[in-house]
Length: 178
Image 1 (cartoon, one colour):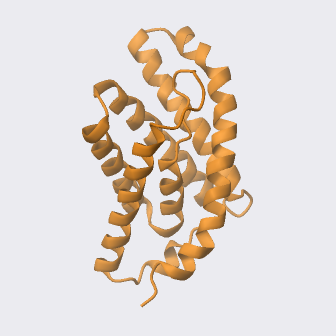
Image 2 (cartoon, one colour):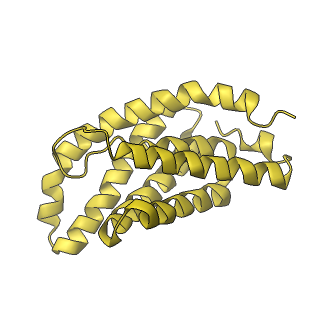
């Protein structure tokens, strides 16, 4: 369940600092993820920055989390990306964000953090495959990546979901202490 209702009375300064810290952590995770060899298959990454998006969805409202996602993607593209990687990140990141937001909002009581993360990982890959289909003008090319990306989404979604599941109580307890 979202925790953001508990944190809506936090001062604007504290909330801005919290968002800035989340963006910074996501950028650091994105940078270091580039050095983790996962598989020799195009598009397969752990998606460590998505742990920050999922965490933000529990503490921030829709607009604040969307802002965090867009700023993270744009800044990451400026620091280490290129034009094509920006579009892959944007499409995957936004679709993942929307799916996870809907999961939390609509069925969050019945779906664990891990389940929400797996749904977000699948959505992220679908968003990226939409860009592949657009660039290649072939849905067949995009679909050829689907089996491997589905397996990776399951693995990465589980990993990120378990990580966030263990982080949430700590952040809830310590993030806004005075």
